[in-house]
Amino acid sequence: MRLIQKFNSAYADKPVLTTMVTNAVLGGIADTVAQTLTSIRQRAIRQPGGISKDDFIAIEIHELDKKNPLPQGELIPPSMRLPPPFDFERLTRFMAYGFIMAPIQWKWFGVLARIFPITKASGTAPALKRVAFDQLMFAPCGLACFFTFMTVAEGGGKRAVMRKFQDVYLPALKANYVIWPAVQIINFRLLPIQFQIPFVSTIGIAWTAYLSLANSSEDA
Image (cartoon, rainbow, N blue to C red; front, side, top):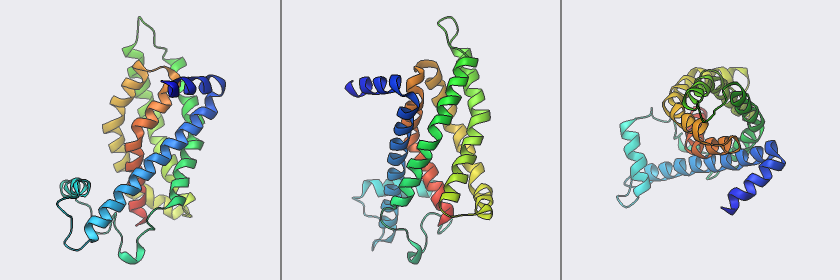
């Protein structure tokens, strides 16, 4: 409760900066989750005898792998090319992206709130219109910005960006449309505007972890 009060106070004083810091922290948490999952999967696969029956998390990841098999080497590169145990540069890139994108998200949510105001008399229809605009306009652009930013920040050029779009963009956009419309209906219909971006960022920990894995899989 105190945390919410402090957030409300900070948001009332400096809404954009508060949103930027919140987004950066949650983006860092998401990439930490993604790197941890990758590390667990690597350790389980590479240990003698394979996955231990006592390693519950590794078993769960392995079961997901069997249901959705990945080409050999897509997420786990050969041993000579394995990443360090924890990539702090990658963590910094994710936090920077969240920090930079927050003002754009804040402005966009404000535009949606003005165009489609939610009132006691009319709530569901404007919320659905916000979701439609958000998913048809902002989501494709946001994903494009994400993969472009990450590729360029990793040192890639135009060719690397194009390859990322060819291999990763459409699957990520399809996954977006499976997850985010329902989340955004709850977000736009039930939450005050100051909580909308933090809510998206919090739910987005799993989503950003997925994007982190998708982005790193193409680099492997």
